[in-house]
Length: 207
Image (cartoon, rainbow, N blue to C red; front, side, top):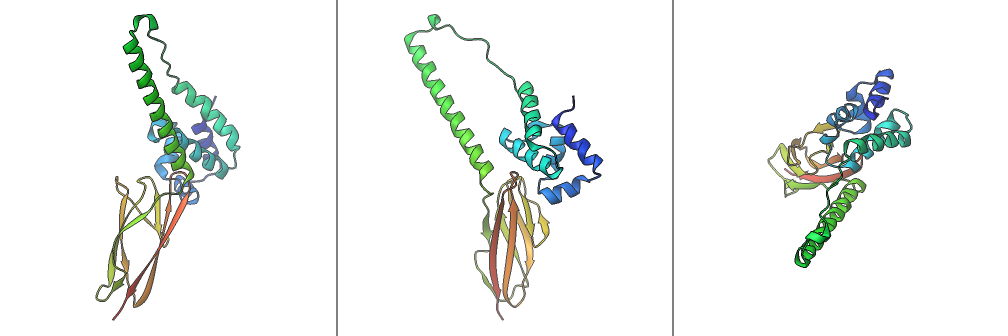
């Protein structure tokens, strides 16, 4: 039986669509497309990101995304089927130890709930984009300026149709030429979940 990645790859090859075209039209980064096709789940930071990408990719190839997600869940559960079979019998625990175990269990549950909530939030919300520099918006002698920003390290960044690559910390920079008058810079950032944030900055050059 074919895996989810193999099904997607087979359909893409049947349609003769290069990976670069998939990346451009779906806004899914190339390394994630390759990871999905090769079932390399450890590449992703969370289960939620994987399901979001599979859904987007399946719809792009005009496959049934619900079936693809069902196949993935079945496949993922086999890989991630780790259960704790050893349990400490309560008769060997002192009251103090039982209390410690209870507290630790509560803390672990709270950590899990917090992490899950954060992942859901990251999946549902568009990427956060911060423009660090320049801090001023009026220039006199400069012919071009360096714009420095920060966002998700896995985001796809486009500036007037040109792609800008972030570093491992999510920081990005680019040079922007200035003309006399108002210069409007449009920065489009698409997260790994497919959500988009558009930031527009205005810089004025005066004589």
